[in-house]
Image (cartoon, rainbow, N blue to C red; front, side):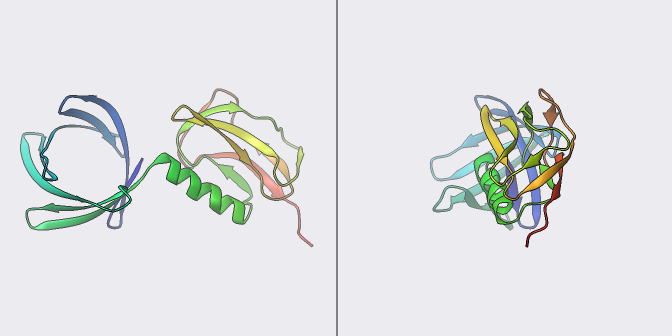
Length: 171
């Protein structure tokens, strides 16, 4: 998931959780912490031998927090994979790009197109699986497949170009 802290965007992945011990990757770098939550919304965090106390104030939608630590305060927005997918999908519906890009890391399930294929708006160009959920990626305008850069079974990264398209001119 993405975490927005002010102007910083971090990619966070939960690797393992065992009681209070949590293993994460933050922008691909491993991080292990011990976290103890109190009922009043405060938490104690132990990381690399250093102790931190934080007060968490949850926003109304549960996807954002104000975090207060000693003399610092941060506003944190959590962008989960569903919200990220919807944001990417909505922008794709507005105007078709000349490429189809992975909105998150995942695996290619199916590529029902090949270079040279003519696609109509609404045709499925690729099927990806992420977080045990399959998503069909459709084109929103008539176009021709210029090149397919992945194959079934390939692992893909966030923002990786999957298919290049040549858009048909609109009249």
